[in-house]
Amino acid sequence: MPKDRLPREVIAMRIAAELKDGDYVNLGIGLPNMVSNYIPPGKQVMFHAENGVVGVGPSPEEGREIPDLFNAGGQPVTLMPGGAIVDHAMSFAIVRGRHLDAAVLGGLQVAENGDLANWIRPDRGVGSIGGAADIARGAKRIFVAMEHTTRDGEFKIVKRCSYPLTATRVVDTIFTDVAVIRVTPQGLVLEEAAPGWTPEEVQALTEPTLTVSPTFKEIQL
Amino acid sequence: MARAILCASAAEAVAGIPDGSVIMVGGFAARDAPSLLVGALVDQGARDLTLICNGPTGRPGMKDTSMLVHNRQVRKVVCSFPVPSTTSGPMTDFEAQYRAGEIQLELAPQGTLAERIRAGGAGIGGFYTPTGVGTPFGEGKEQRTIDGVDYVLEYPLVADYALIRAQTADSMGNLLYRMSSRNFNPIMAMAAKTTIVEVAEVVAAGSLNPEHIVTPGLFVHRIVVRPE
Image (tube, rainbow over all chains, first blue to last red; front, side, top):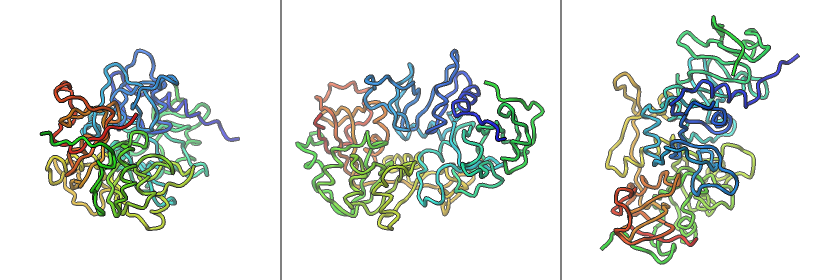
């Protein structure tokens, strides 16, 4: 009997809980971008969009869009009080200069040493790197948000990435629809699992060997 | 006399761009592209261009650099975002031409692309960046370890022409941008021999707060007003 996996919203909520008050954070397109919807009240997190927005605010109501204000996914956004607009060289100086506390990125594959592949599916033959290589290398902590396995059930958490890399040895924590896994110098540590999932069941979906954390617990929000 | 010339039309602004030119085009995505100038360059017809931009990702009919690719004016693209993330929807002209071997691609991480453009405009001969080390983006590049961090050497980018978009120019060519449509425009203005800008309005020199000016007019050569 296959167990329930967490919806994307819950993955986003779990990552939002990981961010700290006062953090500056870059969010990737798609699932990572959903994290901004779940920052708890009382915690201020400033989101950086690599197209030059520091302090991305919520989506505007329809008809109240601010001209020429978009996030890196091209969606209309607002600006937080205290937000700032910068050019592209400064935007990536913020990234590369290690001024971001964290980034949340999507993943196609993550290796047990923290290598990240998230920009090209080899069968397409051409892909867009965008800002992913700079952000993965530059932000202080890299959180990967993704489904635990591919639609065909293949491993996405692997011993070595077979897809072309985005950056080497950068991933801090992997948040999936099944588990929270930290990348450590000693290998992958299973910190949390979705309700009803045992460490053995998570291991079965994960190619490298997982060490179960002494504080292993059910994912809590 | 101002270095910047106010042109009566976009056609006048892009007149004289020869075949084989290296062209930078500002904008992050199709919706903030300098579409007036790009459209004029399509009509002008210069061919065999090298295009430096964030990416010609517009689907057919969108008014960004994909128009130049569609019109087969581009020989090579240097960019970070050559194709849309998803394969749903019609294939872009770039992807079709790339698959057919009809157009060259130099793929650069976006921050590296931006810094190469900045370096080109700032007279820097190259720089070491940690981006791309150990990935396809570092392959074949000089690598160096500085204070325990691995870097690859990247070279500057310069252009014959930059086509950019701003909100307001004054008659000296000083530029203000609006919100996130600033993006690559200020650094491309610095990196081209001839910078051509489309703006929403032109105001008298002296009427802008000098402390707010993002691009000083010495980088700007031709101005055209976008009909709104």
